[in-house]
Length: 183
Image (cartoon, rainbow, N blue to C red):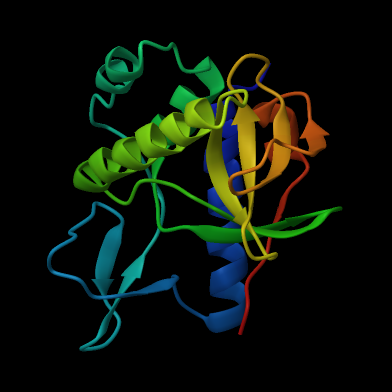
């Protein structure tokens, strides 16, 4: 059985290969000296760097988030966000286009944790089931989330309860995706 981290690595590699095929080089990201990353693979121009996803080698943990929320995060969520450092990248499935979110660096992982805490606190305040976001859709204010209790993948409008199930697990959902490279 293939681990979620292996599926993410394959999908990210497929994205990089599709990008290189279309553009002749690695993906490009705006330079930001405040946010260094192991993803940076060299300079593209004076304003941009080349990048590619890389496996996380750091010991990333959600222990502090779980302690702060008095909640155990679904194992798929923890594996998803600790598998790769990457810029977000686009993919498509039968339901449409989306942008997968990843930490860019260990520092960005800390920011991600803060955003997850904020999302969970909002869900609790609204008395909704806890979900954890992992992707943006091409529809404004719609995100893809993992139901923390079941691991199911859902479409959710920000601030509302999930309304459309996509897959029974994050692993199943990732297998449905194909990378998308835009001009």
